[in-house]
Length: 457
Ligand SMILES: Cc1ncc(COP(=O)(O)O)c(C=O)c1O
Image (cartoon, rainbow, N blue to C red; front, side):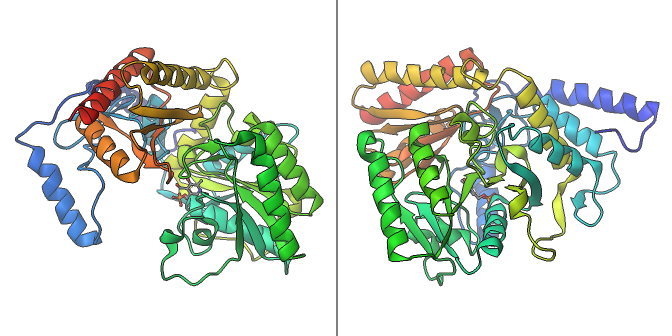
């Protein structure tokens, strides 16, 4: 982005600030235990916050706003590896130079939020960056900003419904997660997330790829698809899926699996709607559908998290009638600016492809897990898998209780991650790209020590 309020003095200050902020943030690079005198601060403030928001927090975590690369500092002065990145958004790593630059540049602009009535060039530039990277075979032509990943999915549903009226039923997958809005809570498989809610969208959930029974996975999914369509003839408008199920436990199929499902869906006249809110930028291509070479099938794709803003990519055919979509915000000028920088950085550097850094990170993690599972953590780590920077593993009996106990210990030992899936519950990592091989070695030492500590108790 251009600097808005601009003169040589402003540019000098920006350059100086950029350097000073980066230098200062780089001091937070290495695991450190809490300062015991400040330990109570996090607890006290979180308690105060909890009293007001009415719900507690999973970790005793309150960020100090300082950290660098994979490291985050807490207000108790402890520094931990952040291997969950705010559940996805922090793909590049803490105080990445592009984040700092985007924010400083945007500080010279005249407002904070950019919207649909009075757009800024940042919205145009990010839209262009996204559309120019959907790949040549793709039919995706348009992009519309939304305020969250959930709202991106809501909007996708509206575009599909308008074209398919009155076919309003949607096919989604078991273990799927689509968000927390009124519509997406029905698309999400987990019923406990919608207790007391009326059903607003009619959704048929079918089995996703079965990692334990890969040979029969396609047949199982297809037979359920055929069953739900037969039971509800001419009622479905779309099939909606995450190619790598995030909350579900990083479950995913292969190209053949998706291709056969998509061919079947097309033959039924269903739109193919891919939720890339969590996968965007995290697999070995910018979009997971590209990694699986499904570009030609996809009609509508939702994005969010790592992009810093959210929205929907869709074909010309799905462009709605006037009045259906609008809204105040595209996002903050700094988030739009950062989003564009992130897309350019990812696509112009060596992150993607079979030999890119994301594939290297995946191999580095999975090979180290394999080693642990054969040696010191035999029968204690029982599974490791995932794609790109989305890596998950199972500890002990893979129950929610064991996994929760383990990740809390891991937190105390210097690593922040989270869980995903149920039966089995997995330890979820959404890794930052700023990890070096030395960091990865240290992370595995902490994992090994924590697993040993837990099971030797
Ligand atoms: C696959 C997927 N879709 C949608 C969402 C909802 O996004 P948001 O939390 O920004 O509303 C999420 C969030 O975790 C997600 O993982």
